[in-house]
Length: 175
Length: 280
Image (spheres, each protein chain N blue to C red):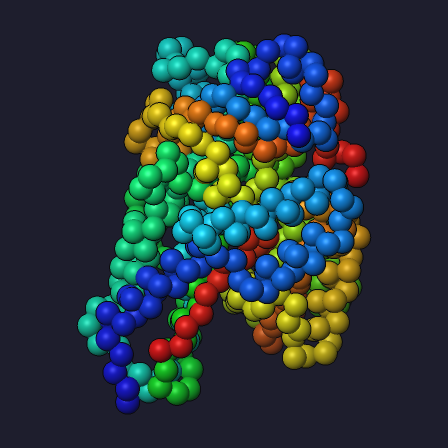
């Protein structure tokens, strides 16, 4: 599998093709339902965000608490479609990568192409393997949301499939 | 009359919750192995299935949750009517067992207020269904129910004229619409008949059956087989990457219904079937 380093560069994004397997290493942010809703409320109210999306990759996930001796507990992807109503707005702000599971809406697919971004599919239900690929976890924002808070993860050889590439090729629409 | 203490109930739920979240059921593992063997080598579906099997192995060895969505704790309790439960209220004993297991084994706490979305922080309350049955034992079934798949479930109030064809169409259409979202290959629990509410419960109960088991009623078993065949013809495949296995199984439970109706509930379970049972 191709090794990909995060944060993503435009060249890296250009080189990715839907359907190919990749091993991601570097740093990512987490965010799921409640964090997305709150971020968009901040934007609606013109409030400054506690972190920047520019050049970032977001992982749609809410981890299990870390057992002793581990950086993170089980942490596989959640269903990306629930974040579809928020994603184009974040892509317009400079978000470059998304990691989750399952198909995306047409609006998100178009926004991926428009913003030269990429969507990776992690394997749902493989939480223990993904938890072990997380080497460090730091709380970034919204601690009251518990597992739904925004964390920064350092990941190493995190296996994914390129699901939607920057040219709009889509692994879910091949069948 | 036999007495069972609420502490026994609590401890049993604690063990069931722990084991359910740390391992897949044997029938689920078997079905996943079979599915993996039918996919083309080097395909995305084969990669997904192999990853999932490797994950189950890692989770069991390292005592990590198989999936971070350790679910809504669903408990089906068949309570013998010759049993006297002494101590705490039954549902409080169940919640205590859930609370302790989710804390002790680093399982995610996923239960929140539906309006404010504030997390209850201990994964309670559990969803408890009690049935009074004959005898003097208590049979507890624990299902760790993830919501990526729960979200894709549907309930149909069909007209009687729709018949068997309508039932099968409802099942297949639910899986088709769910697409890649519920972590396929899915396990499909179906309720047929009853009322609006009992039908949904039957669908949940069907998910506690072993994958590959058949309804003892031949006409219902035929619905299970036909629905499974048609679902796998959808070619959604593991994780929606295309492939031969979109569902690992279809299980139907039924109840008599009203002359005016034909309720059908379709409860979707992801490929991580986490279900444990014990009889006290």
